Length: 218
Image (cartoon, rainbow, N blue to C red; front, side):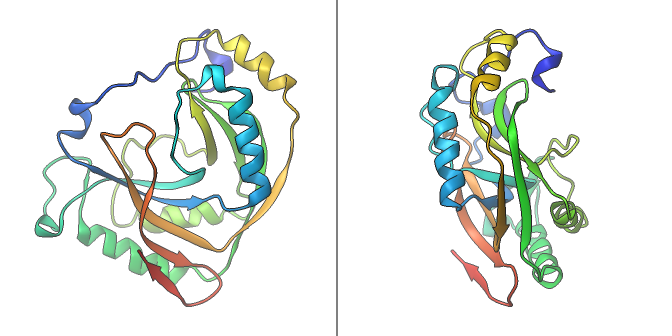
């Protein structure tokens, strides 16, 4: 839900969420890690400007989520899912092989202005060539996306730390200097973050290089 539809933002509470992870550790996704220095510098400036509103520290790399897979099963249980949001090793291999065979061109994206969901501040991502939609369609052939909503490509700046009035966020966004970026993406990654570590870093397991035939593992 976008911010202008609610009176207050929705805060993230710093706690463990056992009712969600059930003791599982690796929450997996396909993503693009932002590596453009100018864009990273701008994102850091935005984060600093809004720091009083955001849940900090945040050690997760700036990224664009492509497809949320779910909790990655262990090798020993690679073909067995115990929960609806489990993601098996077999499903990962199917997605990986399909993406590796389908993706051949680098991706060009436009990064737009500031916006906000009810729970998070973000920068808009404009997928003019529908390249991200194509990636998602390939992944969806082998698994359902977890908690799938209408896909809105974005770069999260941060989660809110309290139920601030939405108008205070909107006013601050208007006051911050807007910038536009065009970036070229040469790699997508598959990895996970640790479910028990709120806003912890992404850990890459596999990557696919775009524009050539090389694939790199981690």
